[in-house]
Image (cartoon, rainbow, N blue to C red):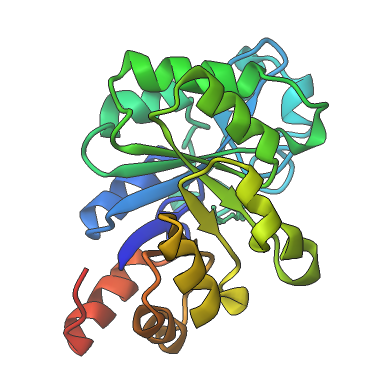
Length: 247
Ligand code: G3P
């Protein structure tokens, strides 16, 4: 069962920053998960929330800020003074430095925008430019994004995210099979044996989010999940070693 560092090694380092991604690699994660959004002037940056307020010293929505304005923000100081000066990364920077060194799960997060292909198209172009078709996974709660990715390059692996509980019921149901994706990414408490077996029998991988407690890691491992997303990849690696679990 592979380990993906959720927003990088986000339990200890500022989420979705180069430091969090580098530390995840050092910790032995198989992959990182990160969140992609477009700035007002069309640059793909890495930020989970629609606004920069929670994780930076700035204010406002990513889609209303220019790339230059985003570059001026501090994405580390809210996690701790020691991280002061950390910048919001751009997707290209992540691909350039870490591409091919571990798996990269790019979540397309244009949820506060109307349905359009811009983020999906630009992400595919970057994946192709850096020759990362075999090591990047694109995921989204909005399945149109995955349709756009597959439309542009069917060889890129796509994972449909399912929200927690009832909100994710459609994505977890058989109906989602009208969308041609390679994996389902359900919330970990919604992940059970029959769901995993059904998806795997259809050739899809199942990657559960976001799993931090060792007993939950053990449960998903025993169920046969393909991967977990975790905030603490080091802890997960140590747990694997202590329990002699295989990747
Ligand atoms: O990508 C898996 C899961 O982490 C999605 O959650 O919180 O990053 O949007 P989030």
